Every structure is written in structure tokens, then in C-alpha cells.
Image (cartoon, rainbow, N blue to C red; front, side, top):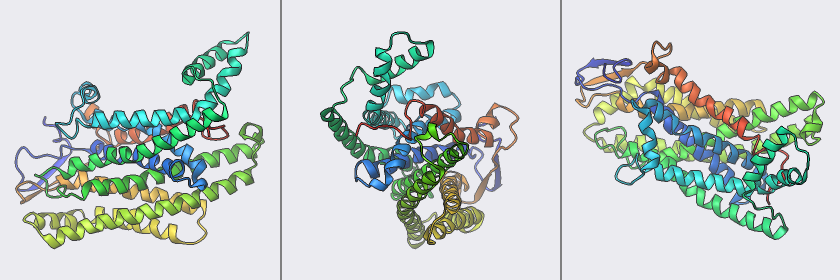
Length: 417
């Protein structure tokens, strides 16, 4: 059976070898890489531009970006018919193809994030490793903890003021360097689509810029949502008289800090949301104005077949409604949760409309193809390329984030600066 035949329904005149080859996992790929880039940009707003109101969520976003980094390539690996060949992308990177350049960009970005985390948490590593190093009778658990944190110090135990100032400078340089690399990491995903000359919907020079803006929007939204969920959990524990484990912060103090951080972050999310919506509408108007040869079939898809996906789900529910929710005065946590969930849904639908919508019409310009997402899996192919495969990819970073925070705590920790 040809790959894609399971979920493709054809209408009118479609070439025999045409199918919806790129499934939901290819939708998830730019969505997840976008979250990585957006989370890093949010953290850099504090480290590079010194916006102190974002200090708490900046550290949170950087650690979350690191967790997302491991999951970003997973959708492509699941989509490959020979997944073990996926490692070739990282082991043999080159610039002769756009997707092969991924190895260079991804490795560079990963090295920057890991280095920034190390400088940010070096003081924390020393504060744990040093007492354990001096302790004589260690338990097995303490030996494991000592081995982990001693390794993470890389043998650098100097936490003098002069040393910490050097760490601070290194963090600022890495954060500044990471912004263009993060944008390039996701911009190249848009570049891959925008450089496909055979597809009229994807072929636009605006595609990389649109991808970058929507990536920043979705990354900030996911960080806000995760931050709110984490703070709500901390407040719940605080109410259960476990404040001693939470730096003696009361539920009211946590509530105040949470609202201040979310309201400040929402302003930046709103700013990038305006840019993202403007670019997408500009691209739509440009296509209609130039009205190239393929415009007739594109118009039938945009204003006909995919009208609900584009104008109802993406623009109205995913863009317009959260835009209004953020503009209303006195933003509450509940309203913020609803808004960021809708924003993420809107960005996901944008990815869906680009990837699936771009394959919805035949190259004959006289037929259409419909994608039926496999919900109930009946074999390995429909499991990894279906709803549950996509859901697993989306949930994986949360589990990784929980594990990583055991090494890189996001609250109540002494930074290197």
C-alpha cells in the first residue's frame, strides 16, 4: 500500500500517484519547533533586554525550551518509513538540502541552550556538590546526587563575585546569539515549505517570516500555560501547609506574583500576535491581488473547501477571540488560560492549513484530496501517524520538563547572577 493511501480521499481529477503524503506528524513538526523557538525568545527578553518583570518566567521558559528541544525532531522520526535513518540528519549535516541543514542549525541551537543553562545554574550546582564533597559518610542516594552535580560543575567551583559576573556576561552573550539561531531554527521550517515551487500555496517568500512570528506566539503561550499550571500546583501545596518546601511563600504571595508575571507576559504575547496576524493577512491579500495562474484553485480551497479551518477555527477562534480576551482590562488567570489555549489552537490550525491545505488540491488543478486523521489505530502506521501519535508528541515535553526540573529547578534557586 502506498504511504498516504490510508487517509486520503480523492475528489474529481487527481493523478494516480497523488496522495496526502505529509500527515499530522508533519503538522506537529513545525508546531513543536515553533514552541522551542518561542520559549527561548521569551527567556531572552529578560536576559538580553533586561525586562526584570519577566525574570521568573524567563528562567522557566529557558528550562522548558530545553525540554522541548528533545521532542522537536520526534515527529519527523515517527513520520519516516525508516526512522533509524533520521540520525543521519544530525551525524552528516550539510547545506545541499534544506532539511539536511537541520542538523547544523539544531546542533548549534542545542549547544547554545545547554551552555546558557550551565552558566545560569553553575552556582546552584556548586551549592549542592560542595557540601556533599566535604561530607564523609554518604548514603547511596547522596553518592548518586554528588556524582550528578559534581559532573555538572565541570570541575569549576569558583563562585566568587568576579566569577559570577563573568557568568552573567556569558549568559547575556549566549542569549543574544541564541535569538537569531532560534528564529533560524524555525524560519528554515517555513523556508522548506516556501521553497517548494511545485506547490502554489506554499510558494511565498513570506512563509519563513510567518512561521517565525507564529512560533514566538505559540512558544510564549505554552510557557504562560505551563507557568500558570505550575503556580496553581504550588498554591495548592502551600494551602496544605507545605510552605516550608516552597521557600516560605504563602498562597497569597504566590497568587500576586503569578498575576503580575502573566499580565506582563501577556503584553508581549499580544504584540507578537499582532505581527503574526498582520503577516498572514498580508500574504492572503497579496495572493488575491497578484492572482497568478494557480489562484483559481487556491481560491476554491481557501474560500470553499477549507473555509471553516482557515476563517472560523484559525482566524476567529484562534486569533480574534484571544486577541479580544487579552485586550480587555484587568486580565485574570482564568481568562489568560482560555486565551493562551485558543492562541495555541490557532497556531496549530495555521500549521494544519499550511501542511494539509497545501496538499488538498491536485497538481492537475482539477481535483481535490481530503485528509482523514486516523483516530482509532488499527496498526503501527495509523498509531504513529494518527491522533494518539500526535497527542504523545505534544505531552512528551511536559514529562521531560518535570524530570529536568529535578536538575534545573525553576523556582527558589540562586542563579549565577
